[in-house]
Image 1 (tube, helix red, strand yellow):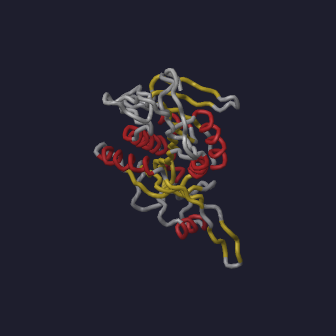
Image 2 (image 1 turned 90 degrees about the horizontal axis):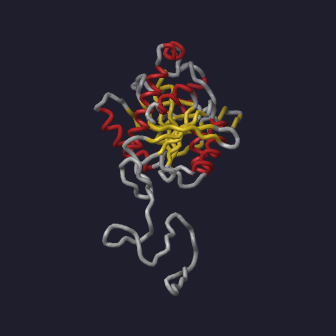
Image 3 (image 1 turned 60 degrees about the vertical axis):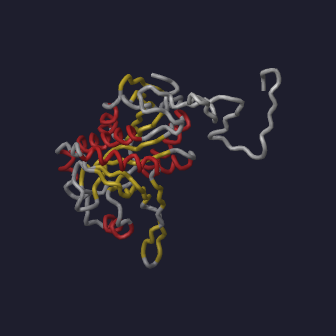
Length: 292
């Protein structure tokens, strides 16, 4: 595969999630970081993207730390967290997919004599990726994929009782959340700290966050939900375009030669490319004898 192809890092927590994403890749190879973190990198056919898929394990803190490492190592253009979640709304079904317009970290707050007062943090999904998801979900609906662009709640809690005090806390303070999971806030925060990195959380609904969770899992709901989430992630990336302007054909590198195009569509002339950089004050240059 081309070393210059634009990269998307796809994060998962569980083996079933990892396997669902990996099934969409061609020409995979394993890469190992100096600290031991492993990814499989492969091509997403029909797109300019190279995908690097990682299985991080459970929890937001773990996700945040390893996401920072992976972003620093692989320098991706986009980051997706793809996996399963519990559904929080009556109109959501097992196998539906929630694309996170927002991700809430739900456990921050203040304990007062009047009770616990929530102090949430929130990260919005990348506008570019949410828009790509909007288009992708319309296409996938024809194939029977039910998708929702809605907020997602994230906490280091497995919710398996919809009548619990914690479930009531979620309903009172995060009433617009459609799903609950454990890693999205960590990945979203790491993406935010990395600067202008497009990031999105995509979750397939494998249970209803109630006492029937174990029965749902035993029925194969996690496998189905993970497969649907991976399908939506692929659909999003088929719509999403690299920032450098790569074409949608497979194997395109996404690079451009400079900031000024000639009549043939190529960049050229006596120009310096500062795209993506930061500078202050005038830039002065002189060309002598064909050299700058």
